Length: 197
Length: 301
Ligand code: SF4
Ligand code: SF4
Image (cartoon, rainbow over all chains, first blue to last red; front, side, top):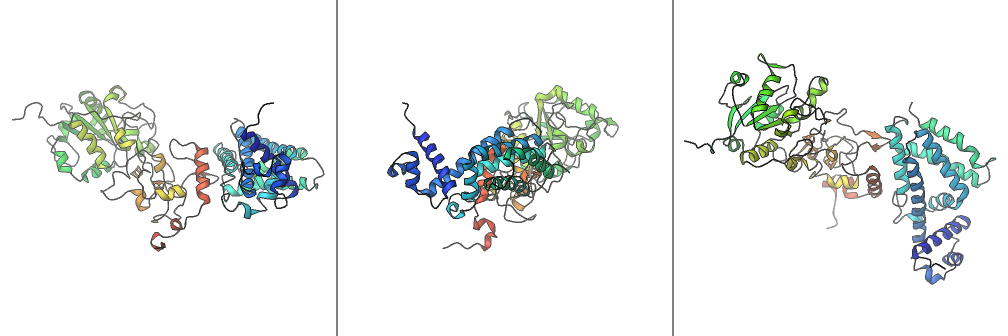
C-alpha cells in the first residue's frame, strides 16, 4: 500500500473536520471527535494543527481557495459575462449539492462564529482567493461593457448574498424544488440586476 | 584659437506647435550657465543666439544637435517656410535629434486636438510612424509636459562628453525613464497600506485609488530628480497625470478610472490578480498612524 503523505493526511483532517463542524457545530465538535473520524490519535492530530481555532482558519482558506480556483477557471474562459454568471451559479449550486459541508461551513461556522476568526483571519485574510477572483470577474464584466459600473460590495453582496440565501433555504429544506431547478432563473435575475443600463 | 576638437557642439532649438512649456521649464535649470558654456547656441526661442531666425529657416546652417519642441504639424509654416521642410533638412544634416516634451515625442496635447494631422517626430502615440522614421537612429525622445530641465541637461551633457545615451523602445533615455514617477514619492507608505487621501491636496494619503494618480503606471523620475529641487506633484498632493507617456493627455485627470471600485490600471508589471490579492490583504489592517493627521499622532514615548 502506498504511504500516505503528510499533505494527504492534512487534507483528510480538513475534510473530516469540515463534515463534523458543519453537522454538529463548531463548539460541540472536539479534537478527539476529529481524530477519531480520521483514525489517528489525538496526539498525532497536534502534529498537523496546533489547535481547533487554527484548524478552523485553515478550513476557511481551503474553501476560499477551492472557490477561487473554480471561479478562476470560469474567468479564464472567453465567454460573455452572462454565461459566466450562469457558470458561477452552477458551480456554486453543484458544490452545495455535492459537498454541502463546504458551504455549510462558510455560512454556519465562518459567518456565525466571528470570534474564532478575529485574530489572523479578519477582513480578507482567509477569503482573499475567493474575493479576489470575484473582483476579477466584476472588473472584466465592466471592461467588456456588459456590467454596470458600480460599487464592488453592492454588486458582490447582491451576487453572493443571493446564492448564500438560496443554499440556506435549500439546507433548511424549504425549497420545493432541487437547487438545479433554480440555476437558470437565478442566473437571469443576477444578470438583469447587474447588467449595463 | 580653438582646435577642431575643442569646438563646442552647436544647438538649434526649433519650435513646432507648442505652448513654450519646455522652453520655460529649461530656463529653470539650476546650473543653466554652466551647461550653456559647453554649447554654441545657434538658435533658441528665448536665449541669446548666434544666428537669426531667418538664417535658420533658410536651411543653410549645420548643427550637431537639433532640438525640436512641440508637435509636428505637416502644414504648419514658420514665417513662410513649411516646418516639414525645415525638420527634414536639419534631421538629415544633424548628428542628434532631440524630440523635446510629450508633443514632440508622441504628439501630446496638440495631437489630441488634431489626431489625424499632428504627431510626434518619430511616434504617433506609441506607434512608430512619425515623419522622421528615416532618421530614427538619431532621435532621442524626452517626454514630459513639460520636461524636467535636468532631463535635457543630462542628455546634453552626455552628448557633449561624446557618450552614448542609451534609449528604450520608445526612444527615451533609460537612465531617466526606467523608474516610475511612483518611485520616491513620500506617500509610498500610504500606497502600501492602501490608505487613500479623501480630498485633493491633503498631506496624508495616497492618491492612487480616488484622486487619479498615474505614477505607478508612468515612467519618469519626478520623485527622484525633484522639481525646483524641492518637490513633486504627488508630494504636494496633486495626482500624477502620466504626462510622460504616449497616451497623454487622458480624460478626467483628477479621478481614478475604476470598474466596480477596482482600479482599471494597476502598477506596471504586476498582474491584476496579484495586485488585488495584496491590496485586499493590506486593506484588512487598520494602521492608526496612517489614518489621521500625522502631526496629531502621539507615539508612546
Ligand atoms: S500618490 Fe501616487 S506616486 Fe505617491 S504613493 Fe500614491 S500612487 Fe504612488
Ligand atoms: S509627476 Fe507625472 S504628471 Fe507630473 S511631471 Fe511627473 S510624470 Fe508628469
